[in-house]
Length: 123
Image (cartoon, rainbow, N blue to C red; front, side, top):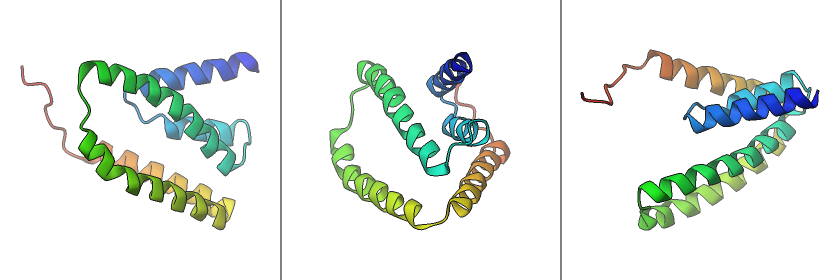
C-alpha cells in the first residue's frame, strides 16, 4: 500500500508541476480510495499544495520578479477568505461538502473543456 501512496503523490506532484489542477485528483483519491473524511482530504491537499507551490514559487522568482504591491493588496482578502472558508466547511455537513466539491470539479472541468482555446504561442 505504501508504494501506491508514493506513486499517487509523485503523479500528483508531476501533474501539479505541469499546471494541471491536481487538487481534485488528490482529494478524489483520498476520499474514494482511502475513505478519508472530506475535511481531512482537503486539509492534506492544502499541505501538499503548500510544498508544491513553494517549489513552484522558487522557480518563478528566478524567472520573473514579483509585484509586491499586488501581493500586499490581495493578501488581506486571501487570509480572510481562507478563514471564512474554513469556518463554512466546518459548519456544513460532510455529505453536502462532498457534493459541492464534486459540483465544483465538474463545473471547472466543463468550463475549461468548452471555452474557446486561445493560441498562446504565436509562431
